[in-house]
Image 1 (tube, rainbow, N blue to C red):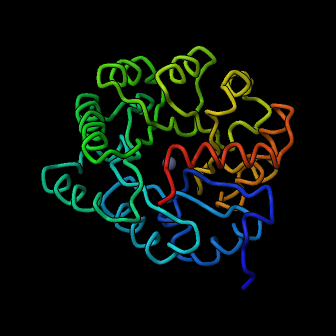
Image 2 (cartoon, protein in one colour):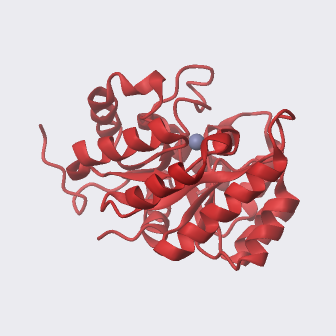
Length: 266
Ligand SMILES: [Zn+2]
């Protein structure tokens, strides 16, 4: 294996949100990590979403701790029915794990109508309280739910958060940035037909932009439609750099350093 020296090779990328814990990728984590490194995606946050996803995220972070992988754990909106007292107790224990650097993914998803909104709001608020208690940043999933997410973030004075796979408007991005948030762009920002996201990306100050794959979902151009993987954060950076008209290695560095501010290296 080649020895990696970040001081000698510029352009390395931090995938702030990926799901190597998902069945689509979990069967071959080592291969995906290896390929990510070939594409100079040298660090990544593996994000949990339900009990099994959280447990796997922590296990992967332990197995690959020396290879730039850390865990974020929580219950995504559509799995909040599993977030009972016992699940919260376990989550609290897991939040003490040294490889766990954040709470999430949590948030509100008003896209799917058959999920319980009150339950989602209660779980989101509980996750924000846990993040405050453990002094960790929050990774937020927001879909068709800006008004409620924004109101709750304001009520709880949440400052350190990542709005993951952002797909909102310029106005929404500006409001979230004003709260102190970081806006993370996924492969969606590389699609041709997402002009609203393009405009939002241009409006976000460079020191608040993050990049992610959200693998196995949302593969960026030129891999659109395929099973996404962390290596392809490279294409997110390439596409975003083109859109923002800045050097791609510079954008890689900026987004990596932004990530270090959200999730400080220990
Ligand atoms: Zn995700």
